[in-house]
Image (cartoon, rainbow, N blue to C red; front, top):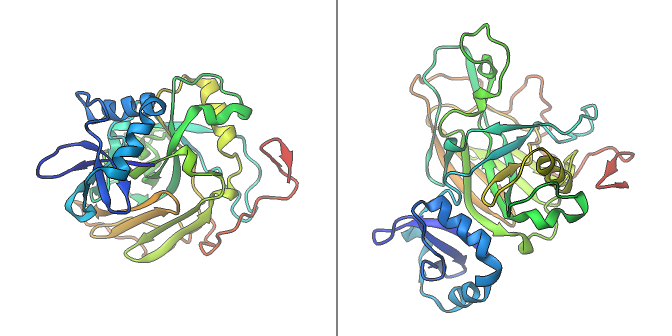
Length: 320
């Protein structure tokens, strides 16, 4: 199933199921909490028990035409957003690296049709897109072994890890050491358009990720190229901290096709099998950077879709 949060003239932040006919309101099947996030967490926690009722609603309930609703981020305020750093082989151009993660500000979440607003700072910062697969956690999950990783996964969604580059990796003053705060400005975590339940995705490390900026294809890769695949991410993250229902784990990005975001652009992310969403970009300072794929330190082979991990690397406990 594909779950969304949506708004209409008659409903505000209602939970729904995506069907071929449109969006089916499941407010009658899901306990509405005092925040939309908690409503979705209740759905995650009680999904197994109410699944038959949800299936019946999806098959028989009246569907609202998709164009008549406004989709929201399906998890408007996750308890945690935990992001992988890099985590792709990228034509084996990078040396093997240990799995590393950082926390991103949950208040940075926006949804389909919203606007990414670049901060109005005069520092020589630049801002880029990182299109990523995101895991939606079913918790509580602590010390989950790689073999049992599915126990901690409710489903998947798309996330754009909007990222400050250059001086944007620092905080104030500009002489301060590098931090990850440049990834946590408000609106820097577009999430959506839906949550696809785990049973619909046979292998999260076999998904096609794409990203367009004003129609220009930039990211275009397979999650099969992850250096540290989803089972390892679950094991690592749950060893460090307890993962709760509705938490989000972003799996990192393939830097091939990385480019700048700037004022007036429309960006679109699609993970095949999950969904597609678009957002606008606004820059109060109207800055501009070179248009197109970034020609800096990151690799630029953005036409690559197939995996490029080295054949000798251990992958999920087995040699390739």
